[in-house]
Amino acid sequence: ESSKFPNENFLVGVGTGDTRKEAEELAYAAISRIFLVEIEQRTRRLVEFFRTDEENKSTWRKNMEVNELTKVSTRNVLENVSIAEIYLDKKKQIYFALAVMDRQKAELSLRQRITALDRELEGLLKAARESDHKLQKVRLFHKAAGKIFLRDTYNTQLRVVSLTGTSKGPFTAISEIQEELQDFLSRNFKILLV
Image (tube, rainbow, N blue to C red; front, side, top):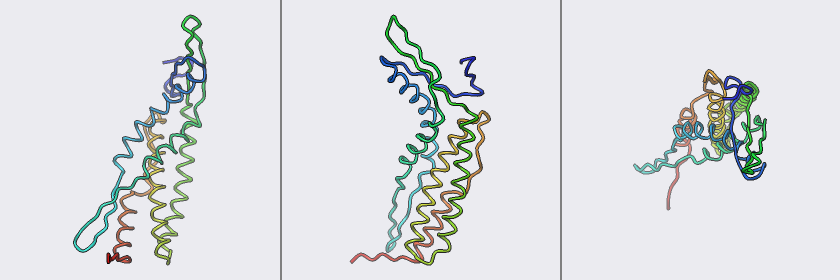
């Protein structure tokens, strides 16, 4: 642990390489791995399946948006990372890079993103519930489900960044939206195979 970048205030990652650029990229990657492990672990629990009932047969379909959302959210959180120090070991000709993330700035940024997503989710769910157009309603519910995955990913990052491990409470459970969508589909759509 560095006295210049204490754990209470910073997340750090170290990278080494034959070139300065390589060392910097590996330092960024070291910080991103902290988040990827947490996010992938958390999103695996959130992957849900959609069920289609057809003449006493059920077909299940897995939601595949999780990987894309993980990449997007990890890229966003890395906006708060900078290279603080570079060192060249002249004897071995190896560069060392230290990447740092200010916990307080990252936490503020993540809380702002979550608040913005909450506003967007409120609008999407309101529009979905009030829509008279059936396909539009389905699209809006699917879009809201994707936003909830993204929100949960940001929330997981917030738990990593925050020293106390706290995050914002859930907006709504993905299962509630999927249940509402499933109920709507079963009441309004009948698929016949000819």
